[in-house]
Image 1 (cartoon, rainbow, N blue to C red):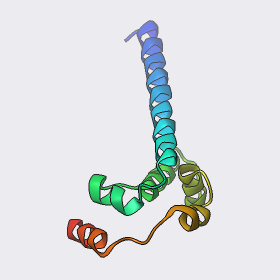
Image 2 (image 1 turned 120 degrees about the horizontal axis):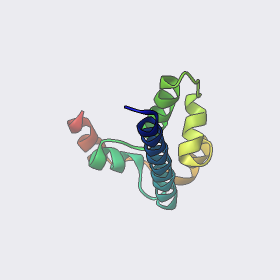
Image 3 (image 1 turned 180 degrees about the horizontal axis):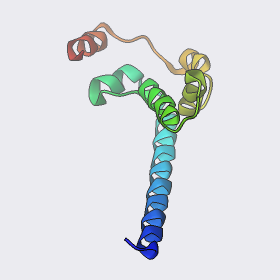
Length: 105
C-alpha cells in the first residue's frame, strides 16, 4: 500500500467514525425524546437498554486508555443524572415485564 492509499484509508476511517458518532448522538436524542420507553421494555425487546449503552461507553473509553466513571457515562446517555431521570421518568416494572426479563436471562 502506498502513502496515497494509506491517506485515503485514514480519511475513510475518519468519515466512518464521524458517521458512527452522529448515529450514536441521534440514538441518544431518540431515547431522550421517548422517555416513556422504559429500560425493562428495551431489555425485553432488544436485549439492551440505556444502562447497557452507559456500560458500553465506559468500555469503549477504557479500550482507548481513558477512564470514564460509570455515573458520568450514565449522565451522558440519560442527559441528566440517573437519579433525576429515575425519579422523573422511570415507572415500576410490571410482574409480566419482570417475568419476561427473567425468562430471557
